[in-house]
Image (cartoon, rainbow, N blue to C red; front, side, top):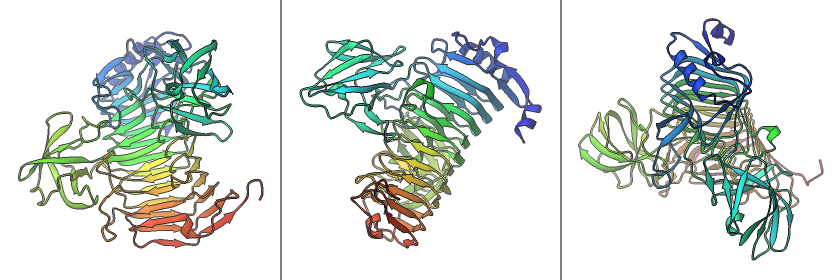
Length: 573
C-alpha cells in the first residue's frame, strides 16, 4: 500500500485537537497522551498528525513504567529499572505518527519513544532533540605549561566547588565519567582520560570559560572539543519491545541519552533516511550518549538504509543476541539458565516454541539443538526452561544456550558513518547479512566487527552468510584495530571446527594513512577477499603485499584474488 492510499484509508487524529500548542513552551506530553488514547480506540489505520511546529516535553507528567533493556545498566549501577517515557505506544496497531517536519524538544532525562507490543507502526517526518544534552562539550581555546583554557558550550551548565567542576542539568548532575575528544580538522573522535579528573584545580576565568590546572603539561590541542558524560544508561532514546513491522522514516534524532534506539525481541524493523547527528544550528558535536542503533534478539529483517550517523559515543549499529549460561540441570528435560553480563538481565529471552542450540563456551561451537516448551522466571537473572527433548549429555560447566528463533536477517545499505570513537557496525547473526554502499569515515577502531563470545559480553551468535561489498572505508582503524575484524572470542581454536562461515568482502575501496591492517579473521570457513582496491596515502607504512594487509588464523577455504594495491603520498595523484 502506498503512503497516499494508507492516508486515504486512515482516520486522522490531530494532536492540536487534544490541547497541544506548537511553538509554545507548554508541556505537550499530556496532549500527546490524550491523542494516543483516542487513536487506540479507533479501529483500522490511524494517522496521529502533528501540525508542523516546535513541541516541548517535560518529565513531570511523563509516564513511568519498569522495563528491562539489554546492554544498559547493572543492578549496582541503577537498581531502579523504571523508565521516564515521553511518548508511549502500547498495544497499538496500524498507526502512523506524522511529524510534518516538527521538532520535539525533551527536557530532563527521558526515553523519547517507547513501543510495547505494537504492530505496523510508522514514525516519520520528525526531528527530536534534548533541551540540555547529558553529554557536555567544551572547546580548548589556549594552552600553557601546566594548564589549558576551555570555552564551555552554551547548552552545557556547570558549577565549581572547592576547585572542582560539576556538570549540572535538568534534575541531573555529575562530576566524573567517560571523556572523548573531537578533532574538527579531521572530523574524528576518540576516547581519552577525563581531564577534569586529572586536574589539580579548576577556576572560572569568566562565565562559560574555565582554566584547568595540572602538575604536568597537558597534551591537548587548541580547537579540539572535549565531551564528557556520566556513563550510566538509566534511560534509552527509543525502545521497541515485542513489536513487529515498525518503520522509522525521515526522522532526525539529534540527541539520545543512554543507549540509543533499542530494538528487543521485535520482528521486522526498518530505518530509512534517518539522521542521527547534532542539529547544525546548535553547534554541538555529539548526538549519542552511547550506541545509536542497538538491536538485541530480534527476528525477521532489520534494514538500515540511506541514513547518516555522526557524533556517537559508541557504536552506530550493533546487532546481536544474548547467550545465557547453563547453571543447573533440574530434570532430564529441564535446565536453569542465567544472564551473565551485568548490564543485560530481566529480558524475556525465550518463548514457548523457540528453537535453541547448546554451545560450548570454549570453542563457541554448537553440539545440540532443542525446542522450548515452557519458561519459568525464577528471578530477573535466572530462568527455568522445560524442553521438548532430553538435555544433551556432557554439558560443560560454562556452556551457554542461544535462542536461534530470535536471529534477524540484516541489510545495512547506503549509509554514512562519521565521528565515531569505536566501531561502525557490529553484527552477529546466522541469517543473511548484507553491508553495501556505505561510507565509513575514520572509525577510531574497526569499521566492521564480527565477534561473538560466551565469557565477556555474552553477545551471540555465529555468522553464516555475510556480504560486505561496494563500501568506502576512509582511514579507519589503527595499528591496534583492523578495519574489518572477524574475531570470535573462542579460546579453544580448531581449524576443523570454525565458528563463523562464509564472509565475503568484495569490491570495496580502502583508503589508509599508514600500516593499518585491512582484515583480520579467526576461525572462519569460507573467507573471501576479492576485487578490493587498497590505497595508502602515507609516506611511511606503505603496503607492498597481500600478506601485510590480510591476517588469518585457523581459517579454511580462504579465497584472496584480484585485489589492487596503490601507494600514494599525501597531496599527489
